[in-house]
Image 1 (spheres, chains in turn cyan, brown):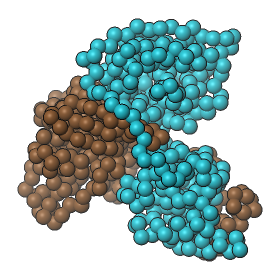
Image 2 (cartoon, rainbow over the protein chains, first blue to last red):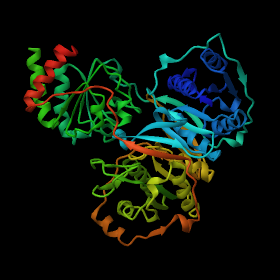
Image 3 (cartoon, rainbow over the protein chains, first blue to last red):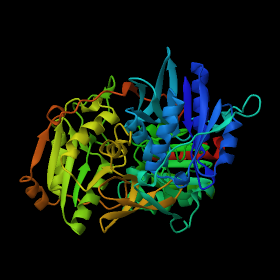
Image 4 (cartoon, rainbow over the protein chains, first blue to last red):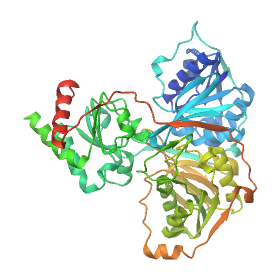
Amino acid sequence: MKILVITEQRQGKWNKTSFETLVAAQQIAAATSGTVSGVVIGKGIAAFADEVAAKNVAEVLLVEHQLLDSYTPDGYCVALRQVIESAKPDLVLFPHTYQVRDFAPKLAAMLGKGMIGDCVGFRDQAGKLVFVRQMFQGKTVADVSFAGNAPWFASFQSGAFRADLLEPHPVGKAPVKPVNVEVKPEDIRTKPLDLFKEAKSAVDLTQAPLIVAIGRGIKAPENIPLAEAVAKAIGGEIAASRPICDEGWLPMERQIGSSGQTVAPKLYLALGISGAIQHVVGMKGARTIVAINKDSNAPIFEIADYGIVGDIFEIMPALTEELQKAKS
Amino acid sequence: MKIIVCIKQVPAKDAPLAIAGNWIKESDIGFEMNEPDSYALEEALRLKEKHGGEVIALSLGPERVKQTIKEALAKGADRGIHIADDNFAQLDPLGSAQVLAAAITKENADLLLTGLQSDDHGFGQTGVLLAGLLNLPHATIIMQIDVQDGKMKLKRELEAGWFQHIECPLPAVLSIQSGINKVRYATLKGIMAAKKKEIAVVTRESLGVSTEPTQKIEKIYVPTKTKKTEFLTGTPKEMAAKLVEKLKFEARVI
């Protein structure tokens, strides 16, 4: 099986999920006696290609064009379609980034193919590749297989594979092969403008050793002081899952998850958080995870070290009291 | 502006899910508007209030999705299109998009909006696929839309706190990020007005669209645990005391 991995860089920086996806590709190649080709796309990115070439890959395809300097979905689709048509892979893998979500399904559709996005693993089931992905916000997992002929398209979620397992090239360096693509200005219909960050957040949750996070279970903004009291008693920062920040109950800078911050504190105390995958990717690296939720089937318990099935409104005040007692 | 909003109906957030093969048992559970789509609907209504025009709520699914279309009409959408399909849960993302595209293409809309992803399948592909199938420009994870002189200036969310402005011509497809706006509730007046609004019913057959599956959900199941969770029991006070004890002396994190 020939596997193409579309890596991602922006403004001179890798998106690290690229390397995790290369690990996935190496493992699929090992299971199917296949080969891995890395694809690096952009402009002025030869150094990125060299970095991939030092890994255990058969080749690196270097796709450079003036019009690929800034990412556009049109530019990437037009260029990568040509790369796929000439390289003829069986499987095209992507890191499941915001950028990939923005173009990869369309790229697959242009070739009449579907894409299994946001996978967390794969299995070789008697010669048939099965991709594992979550459904229903992480409450269930699905085995998904491809129907029809190759090429097949899939993306792997951040954290699904460990980048430190990436195998180096066995003897030195794989060949870097420039691929000429034709991209015309009129192909690109959207115009990317400035990249920017919003006002610098006053709190850097990534540096907080103790985090108390709330989810939908908090029910109303009036209840947030109960959680803040727990945070204060423990000496930690308050954080939240996306819906809480969407409602404006806590500022966006306190959001943990795929669209917010990724944290790895000593302790992550999740109050009334169900554990949808978008949240879990932002906190699963925590050393100790405590989950308190009334639903014993909440996916947050999958990753919790300590769990309490119960009403957070009863437990929060009791916990604040016990924490204060322990301190004094 | 003529705006079509693609709205999915999904199992209610607190619905107990019973797995049945490669889908769930649909009897005995409630359904609701996919939350990310409610932000897309709200954005469509706001654009209409600002620029005039029409908002069409489009949904694919069995008879029950009419309820979600009615909810959109009650909030202010002008009319609905129901693509009646009892087997829609078995469609893959490309198949769903092909069916939606067939209904959309007849409307010549200026703007198509979708939510970011569905809370059931969670593929998050519909908007991007529609753009591909209808050959329209698109942008995703949109946090702000300004329409001026027949084109849009958009604010798109990137990862790790970054954003980007982009310029996009019309017509186009946008996937809306959740939290872009504050979603309205339907008023009693809106609910009454919705009763008079039209919901056109079409089918895959009447649209003349056939789909070929590109992927198949073989089975779904409850995830196996990766960590052994120690569950604490007792009264709230006892559980709180046990937890503090564990955090202090076992995990040693406080």
